[in-house]
Length: 454
Image (tube, rainbow, N blue to C red):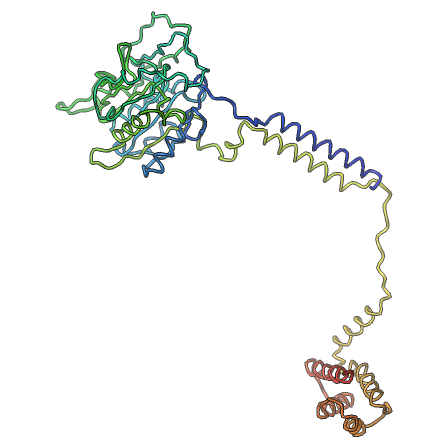
């Protein structure tokens, strides 16, 4: 085994170096830069394009905020009473894909039944799925990879159309030049799209959940869940930046610049004031009670059906490190269990120890209950030692031993010595004694001899 110790250590070091190099090659020590071309709008993201600051602000201020990690079809169970909840959907989704047909129908029905929703996206059709939504970025060559802080529109306040509850105290607004302009009209199929801006997602068909007939059966108050007659709070001649709809029993607001609630923009100018106005307005029910604020996280990749630990290490080299560690462990187990030399004989124990004889005899005497035999091995040595220290013959009688103790004035109890000698001789003559009495008698002998040494 020792001949191969160097080889084993060398292989182990090589595997360790291989694992370290593999980890160093896969780990991203620097966070990849986020930009507006590939933003991460999740409330879990603390990067510049995330919305974690907005979520934590609402959470620490006492607002009832939660994260939705199921698709919109689960709203019927997670928020069964739409009048008591508010949905915040921030785009784009991850990956950048349109909302599913069934989910669009479920979301629109939930809002029509009394829920409030805030859709924050430059292309909100991807998050709401209604073909009436047409959005367009005004810049012909949008600088998507440029730091967003350098794209602040100095004329942002000029977009305020009218004083409303959403624009209250909003002065010094700092939107970006990437804020899209939204129009609500049927799509023009023949219209050519500009090549300078990223192509907006193809509009989905109008869900079947939005019928052509009124969803309200009452003749006095019929409701058509369509995007018509919006209230424009922010916008210009090219379209709306902040639009507000009464959507049957619910309310729907579109904001076309996610920079307002992003981590790198919410603290700039009056952006926080605008964000809080939106939350206060949409987050209050008809009876004045606060609504539960739901952040959509399902479409950003945080799904409840995935194990949280697996979701945490997803996209990292941790699974490969675990696999390599498992292979290394198996190699060590095989190496330790394999012999590299001739077989060695088993070690032989020495069977001639005096203690082994004493232990065997004591065990036999205990099993046979031969207490007198055990005392025969102890009492003669005790008496011989006692007489030798008193200067007497080992055959001396009890009275001679007591008299010698008196003459030498030793600190020993004469009654205990007399009782010990008497009990031992009676036991040897055939008197019955149990284990406890035998142990006590031997203990007195040990104590007397210990007092003689003082």
